[in-house]
Image 1: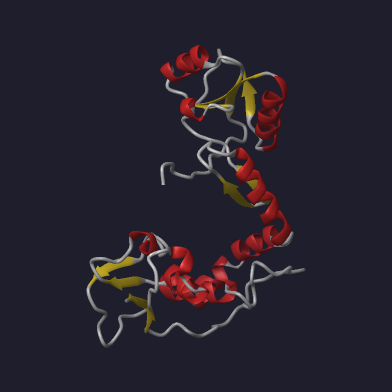
Image 2 (image 1 turned 120 degrees about the horizontal axis):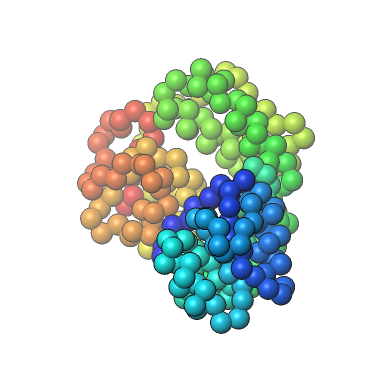
Length: 246
């Protein structure tokens, strides 16, 4: 991973746009859609978008002022790139290629548009509205995370890939919060070869037990805050979900 994916709030914030032609107008529309206040290059700002021929001198001046700059069709000059976006407000799915292929990012966006339900944004708002219910029902953070995972799992009551007319977070326990140990057996170092079940377990695990030669690409499929432990899992698992990779 050569870039850190982040979402920057620009609503009401000044963003410099130096653009011309179709590329400049496309960037203007994107900034307006995000609610940015578009300003010229003389005004103070933290971000700048440039879409002109021969941008080198302009970009150098902006960077000398400490701005982060995006330059159309010039990934070598970019401090950040603009991804293709699937918008299910407040859910945003960004697809980036580091500027290598905007066409590939666009093709992936179009494919995702066809499979992601329009109700995804409503589901996100329902999850936010149900946060207090979940905290009361599952005071333990690990238990709460696993309950949410069960609700959002394929076939779950809040499966995000299914259209929901009026999604709502249910009250009351959904069970399945006891300490447990699961095993993921690898047949390949390629994370694309993981079964759906194995990928799901890694995404939900509180801790991962693995050997010293476990493929980093597989470990990266686990949550960033899951504890990584080199060695065998204990016979009696600790509270929460433990996964042993073998």
